[in-house]
Image (cartoon, rainbow, N blue to C red; front, side):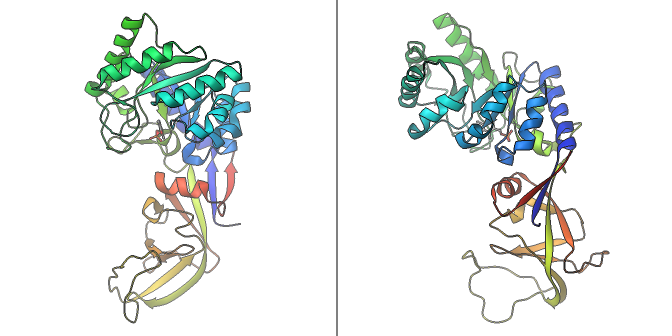
Length: 362
Ligand SMILES: *Cc1c(COP(=O)(O)O)cnc(C)c1O
């Protein structure tokens, strides 16, 4: 059935090996693989569980983690919750998550209570915001950081496992030796002030990996969290390809449901499209237009690239995408399958749409 996502597990394994070489061998960091981009796909998680290089398996959603917690733990992998927890989910966090990222004391107090009930000690990573302005205690408010650490250290059922930062997500701030060194410095100050050892200083996501081979990852950073690098082979700081990775481990396939020659300009008074936007059309004369059976409900039109480079994506609506196949060497027919490489946004929507089937290359 189409549309479907083809997941090439051999290629993903190759990407994993490449990420492990950079992160572990060259960077002396532990490797946390992030599964949310592919909605914690079961076969992918199995592959991660089998890999000795993977130390942690992380996701932003407790539901995804619940789906693999047992398998991950059986294989000696720690489960990690990346998004700071909601008050409403702390019981599930304590149950399924081995290490959760946090920035709010009120939430950590609730985790402490839940962990006590479950007779567990729950590990947390305290998030520090170095200027990207998403989650974390703001780095310039050192008093607030120490206050939080002090209270956490007094909690019986919470263990301060380490600190971490997230960059290049909201503020699009690029990790550098300078800003990551500030994180290491904060870590050292915490260790000195309280006479403790932080197990982890986590230096970011797929936008930090480029620092390793430039020799600019500060000493002291001992963990990286990689989603996009693993799934799509990207360094997301400067949008380069990581050595040894491929970008086509995931392919979206969709079927042509209509193929007709029509004008390129709609006829009649122009209002707004299905999404309330005023469209712009270029007059290209009569075109060969193919409609495929997949739409904005399932994917992101700006985040998919036809494998046949002679195809151009014209636009679409909830359930349809219109392709210009006028200049294709291949004579497309109704029923033919068209393939796309995906960007992060496209992958995320494809992986979460219940209308997109999955097949695996093993
Ligand atoms: C999503 C996420 C990651 C992984 O990001 P990639 O760019 O896919 O590597 C890492 N850390 C946090 C906190 C995240 O939310």
